[in-house]
Length: 301
Image (spheres, rainbow, N blue to C red):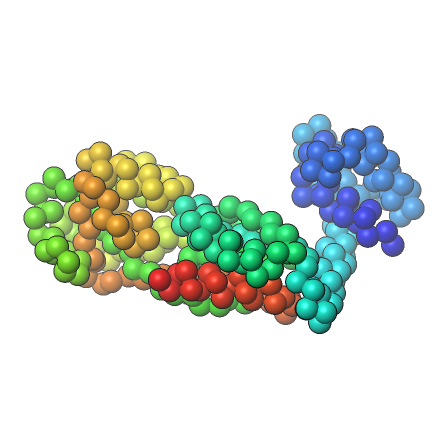
């Protein structure tokens, strides 16, 4: 069985067609199509339902892809184990992290990691938690750095790196902003129900924080007036600064007290977890362990 051919077919499935797959593989469409036709002739069956914009696997294609991905996972695991045994510090490491906080973590951690493992090629991807979980379960992502609650975890492995509290952010000109704690003091606590008539900008419904936020409003006894939803916590901060809304934001985004924003702790002090995740029963290379260790140090600060 040709490993390179397997990689080609998996890429076609991932990109839902020949055109995008060929671009990612730096091949001509004709060359990639010939590889696919050759394999289909060998198998005596089509692997994909062709359409102009979206190729989907046939039932036989699903069987092939399931086992093809397992073969690639075994190859990756084998190479990582041998590299660790030889202390070669070579290989590839795919890392997922969430937008915003994730790229900050990566830029702080990567220089130290590269110094320790200069021969390891890191493949970073900025992805939502749910997309990371899907890729990890499929074996297409080595490590994911995520923020979530306990009930949002999958069957994969999780390493706790820290916890983080969620805060209420309001414009500094808001009448209730005078209740904030003094300079150098901890955040003052406030009842969320006092803001039942205020507009809010919230993270989009598919985000892991949104279910936590919705539960906070449920506990406070009201459904918020949502001005709009966003995929970026920094957008919420900007909207609060511009005095157009309130928001509920993880500590990471208000730790430096943004100008024009007053922050309150909520009476329930809600928190979520910062974790590193990897596929259950997969081999965690020395390089992956080192990146997780460095990330843990970063979040610990």
